[in-house]
Each structure stands twice: as C-alpha cells, then as structure tokens.
Amino acid sequence: MRNPYRLLLTSLLLVSHLSLFAQTKSWQIGLQVGLNLSALQLADPAIPPGRAKFGLHLGATLSYFLKANLFLQSGLSLTSKGMTMSGTSSLGFGDNFVLPGRQTRLVSQQWYAQLPLYLGYTLPLGSTTKLVLHAGPYVAYGLGGKTQLTGDIIYGDMIEYSTWQEPTFGERGLQRLDVGLGAGVGLELGRATLGLSYEAGLRDIGPSPLAYIPFYAGSYKNRLVALSVAHRL
Image (cartoon, rainbow, N blue to C red; front, side):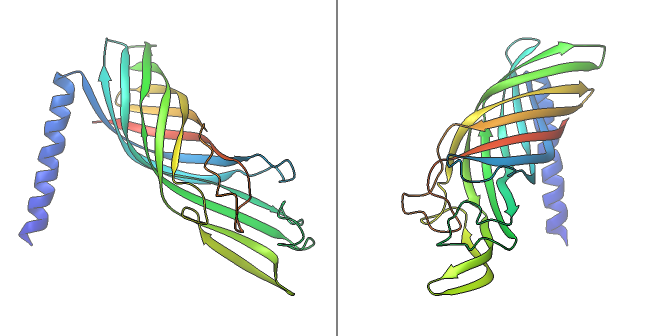
C-alpha cells in the first residue's frame, strides 16, 4: 500500500512547487473544466441546419505575464466536438443511401487534444475582480470518436431501419488535424474565472473525395461555444 501514498505525496509536492514557481516567475498554472456547444459547418446547402451538440472539455492552462495586465496563455485540454442532426428526411445523403420518410438521426462525436496560444489582457474591476479577454490560434489533433447514422438505410436492393457506425477519424472519416482561431471573455473572482469563448476552425477536415456514409462529401469546419470554470493554482 506504500506506493500509492508515495505517488500521491510526490504529486502534491510537484503541484506545490509548480505553484510556487508560478508565483515567483510571472507564471500562472490553472485547471479548467466546462461545457461545449459544438457544430460542424458543412458546405452543402441541402444538409439541414440545427446541428448543435453538447460536450465537455477539461485540461490545464499555463500563463506567462509579459506585463502586469498582458499575458500569453497556452495549455493542453481534452475537448469534445461534433454535431447532431435529426429529421424525417434523408438528411442530405440522397435517396440512394437513406430512404426519406421515417425519423433519421446523425451523431458525430470528435475527441481532440487541443493546444492554444492566446494573447490575453486583464482589466481590474475591483480589489479581487478582473475582466479577462483573450484571443489567438489553436491547434488540435483528433484522438477518436464515433459517427452514427440511424434511419432507413439502403443496402443494395434491401432497406433496413438500422444504425451505420464508423470511426470519426481515419481513412474513411474526417482528418485528424484541426487549426483555428479562438476568442473569449471571462470574469476573474480571486483564483476562479468564469469564462465564455468561441472557436472557429479554419482548416477543412472533410473526408476524402470518396466519402463513405455516414460522412458527407465536401467541406467540414469546426464551430464551438464553450462555458468554462478555471481555478488558478
């Protein structure tokens, strides 16, 4: 039983040393968790709107203050993106893949490891309260996820109400690398910050020209609104 306690003690000592380093060297380390509302911007106008999907994000942040109120922020987070669509049509796939009529549903789940590089600025509002602004680029790499299409799917000369599932990323799915821009505003209350941010993917992560259901041919770009709570160590 000693090894788990040693590991816990080592972790606590490491966090305490990092926090001390952050305070003395203009660095700040924090933890962040929150909710995502994501969607995929698709090029085909035949695909219906209403693609919002709820998800989560969690990770660590690292900030370096260039001046008293000006800072650079990076870190690493695990974040969920994707889209959800439903309706009684073929959802833009065409009658040769999905038969219109009954309820059809598409759910695309994307899990990313994401690394931002933001320039931020703080505006004091009181002795312990600040308005925090940030903006800059991010890069993300797709770790996994599933994309599912449920409906009257056509298999050759047979129609079956079933679910077709494929890995979101891979040879028959979306491209793993995503690059985009993010911006946000937050309210810092002591060591805690409540923030609202928006991300727009700039890179087309769409599948190969030979798109395979449940993926569309054409352009895919990530869009995301996030509500987060951060705690400075």
